[in-house]
Amino acid sequence: MEKKSPRIVVVGGGSGSSVVLNGLVNCRVSVSAIVTMFDSGGSSGLLRKEFGLLPLGDIRQCLLALSSKEDASVRGMIDVLNYRFESESSLMGHSVGNLVLAALTSIHKDLKKAIEELSALLRVKGHVLPVTYDQANLCARLENGDIIYTESDIDLRSDSIPPIETVYLDHVVKVNQEAVDAINDADLVLLGPGDLYTSIIPNFLVPEIKNAISSTRACVVYAGNLMTKRGETSGYKASKFVSEVCRYSGREKLDYLILNSATLPDEVKFAYKKEKAEPVIIDEEVNNYANNVVIKDLVKFEGTTVRHDPKLLTDEIMAFIELCSNTINE
Image 1 (cartoon, rainbow, N blue to C red):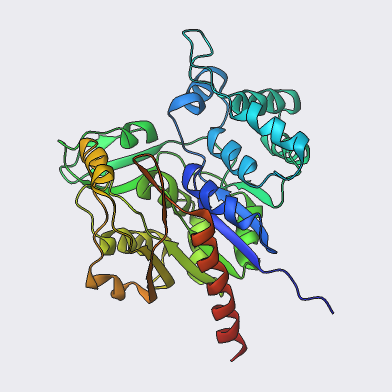
Image 2 (cartoon, rainbow, N blue to C red; image 1 turned 90 degrees about the vertical axis):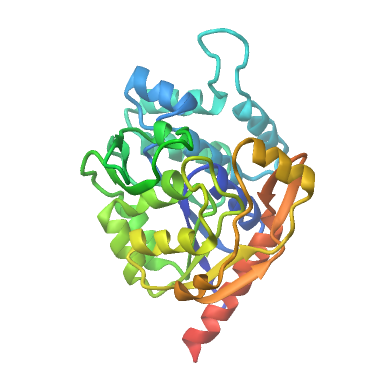
């Protein structure tokens, strides 16, 4: 009897999740991406404001990451869907992929059908699951009691205002049951990579998702951030990131925490310093929040931008799958 493919669920947003999805798409696994739906900036924010649509950008990125890139016709579509209008016009800032999803949603009056149709066109290997199909805004209460009311304002806030105390949704939303089912059926749940308060944690603010992650028998892994982010996680060490993940996900401890060991070149550090971002410092307290802490070189550089390397991160995820299955079998 043929061995069943491991079932992996990636929980996050667009940019971070798409990195690991680009690696997992080449593995013999069954992948589902659970995507936050509270983005209010950029093209997604404009479409949300003008047409009342749910944010589409993170969905687009995950669909493209899981597409059949070995197919020449699909590769051609990817280039088109990734195109972003930059000239001064009413389309400035919009990506073609977001506009296509917006059109399909308007035609079908249903975002789920729009995702299914674009998935078929791109021959997507896996499933992209919005955490909810309801509208809501992400809010943050600061340590001085002030409140920020949208995801984009949290994302773009300056470092001159007090730190974030807590984040929450301004409306109760109905969970996408398919997302809960995916977690319940998973062999491994990967949290991140991605922005802590605007990509990863918002998914846990849907109670059924938090409950599923806190009670799952799957191996739960957090891919720690490479850099701090101005205003959002300024000054955070690795233990602060993972403690917040545990706090919002309802987990006392994670099964695995994976962190980067590579030293960044001076020119990369300098570029990020101008953005008031720094490499995340790994401290001893991380051991309080994970049963296993793995520290390895996980990065690749695109000029002065540092990213998780899809292959290096995926190799670690596949190793965790093997370790977790051995533990369960024992």
